[in-house]
Image (cartoon, rainbow over all chains, first blue to last red; front, side):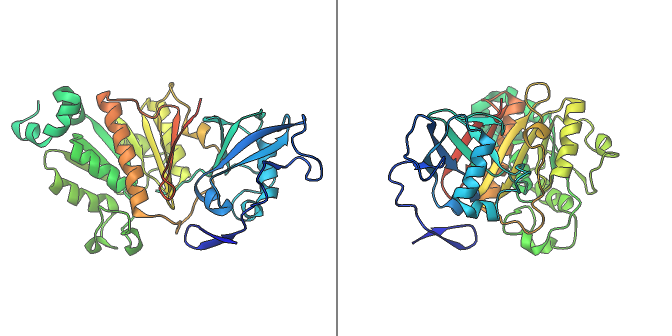
Length: 125
Length: 232
């Protein structure tokens, strides 16, 4: 267990130390690095970073996966995102995503080596 | 024409954009809509830079819990006068060579045209997207640049909207949920975002550098992150 500083309180998170190699989200029971998968990097911004407890991670995801599908996978991988931050299944409005430094929509398809950043747009003044 | 006192006052920045640039600032009118956490530093730096006319729009009164970040409001202002008037009092004494106008009412679809008449740049320092969309619509109707900023916690975002050149605010943030009252925010974060917005205005007015056109700057001061996302 490691204490990760969060906004306003200490958030306890378990570091996934077993992920020495990229985590496979496609099928946890199958062997990783099949040709059906692509390797991507996911970067977490702002409160997502505090909640997940790291700034980025490398993941293997199904070939042809869309940004919207990735967000669903991330909600399963990090329940703290589903519970505290992300919107409900049919409403992804409060998650913004960029790919390789460029803003993308949820229909955008991810490819090998893509760097995806997720960030929460804010409205305070 | 710039007077001798102005030439001395703005000497250090005239070294950057010349007397021409300073004249452009002097001849400009900028609206700061929302004079709170990010509006205070934005208005303060625009007054310091010598923007000739500042229009401050805010109908709320300062509260004690605002003072961790809203630098233009002091203890003596809490609950007494509007934020627009509170800020004007300080800015007029800070720089008597500029004109500070106020609108201490609620901006709406019926009055926005009258209130923002003649403004060269609008600075969005609001705390809600309902009024932001109103500013966005007006900016596109009148072809006026709009500098957007928002903040929460140690995180902030800035982008500059120029009608016909960039995406609109509605296109970038189509379905924003409101943060609501009592969102977490640290003064220093609001200070950075407000300063970035003042810089955007100065770039737009003087031609200095490159404004954040179709670029969204994301900052997270807790983790030293400054990231520019391409919006095209």
